[in-house]
Image (cartoon, rainbow, N blue to C red; front, side, top):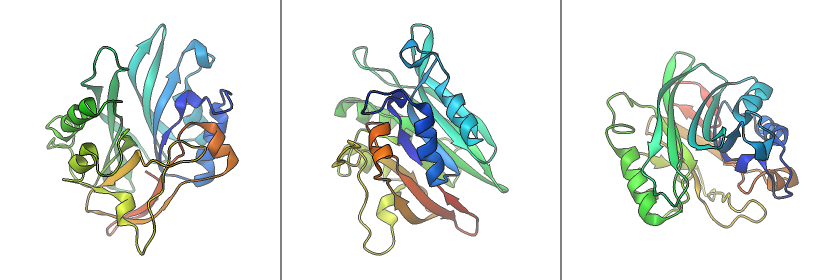
Length: 245
């Protein structure tokens, strides 16, 4: 699952991390990539949202702060039902007038198979997203000799199919929603009240077979954040089924 949780502040203005946890729990994911989490910020009660949600779901987690605000932090996390090992976390090229962006890379030990999972949240301008996507494709991230398949890249890309970012990532990986069997249509995730854009993505390497993709449309899901979560059910070839990346 990939899910931009908007600091757990919903469209109703309520700060409810447990509502986010409930929505995640209802979809039973094994791996969750979260963006826009607050840790120790006054605006959301000074709690560690990453730890709180992971604890409620009984999952392992890693958090990376893209931005330090006052005495707190703001960034991305990866949660997993299976043991995880941090590989790399760092900032992406950003401009001073724009919030700093980052990425988080972990290895997930899935019953003896190792999966590389990278979670990111790209910038607001096309030029900055192009630079950031090239960085992620470079030797420090996806192009690293340590980034051995199977690989999952996911997050809020702030970019739609047909964009440079989508094209760039598709050179080595495949948009999971384009691997759906039959005539299933890709699901949109933003804005959550009435989504018309597909900006949240899961890209997978060829070792991964996609079975289904789901985006919840319940009132809780529409209220909890300005994005809807995207869940991909996939299977490693000759390996176990994974329900959510």
